[in-house]
Picture 1 (tube, rainbow, N blue to C red):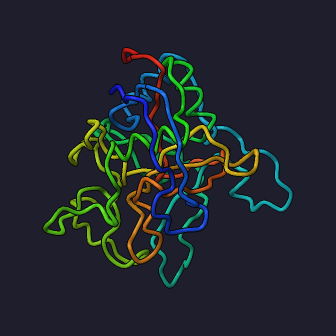
Picture 2: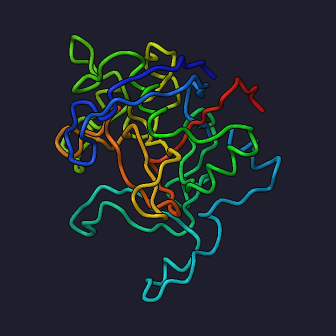
Length: 264
């Protein structure tokens, strides 16, 4: 974990979407934050120690009119649309953290990639076990800015991508100019001034804030699916509302604490 000094900043600066603004001054106290997103290996240790079963591994709540596949354990998975199926997102029976995009996809050999397919309750359960907590939206954004100002796009002076996001025409073709066409192992790109990796791109991250409804939360940071031609949410101010009871293959988490916590 890295210690983040308290201070004030302009939250929601340079908003591109109505829900990001208006810009307002916000203060945060000192806190500690994980330097990288929670990984598959770390989550596996938690599951081994506790026997925890994620929301995606349990029977879904009964919903009148739900299609047959959504009555079986599974989760939401992104897929490139084609002539046979124009959907971007579909319910994949059997999708869970060990099988991020459904049966046939594995995390073996991918322990350093961020864990996904974890709902809000799953993230909260890990936080309790680890002696940490979910960051507030203000803490997350403050840490992502690291005392600086957000760039319009995460590239260096030569235009080389400095984060894992979507280059190309979303959702048809990801050119992978950043070196990845999916989740990347944590720490593949340079850290920000606070020593934090992947605050932008790779996977969205849960915060403790609600998203207007009790069953909706706020996620921050964008993911490998954020593209300039579609949402451009690879910015600290960007925010997305997400159903807390649902995981996807592009949402993960990192944690904070009010004091340093040793890894478990």
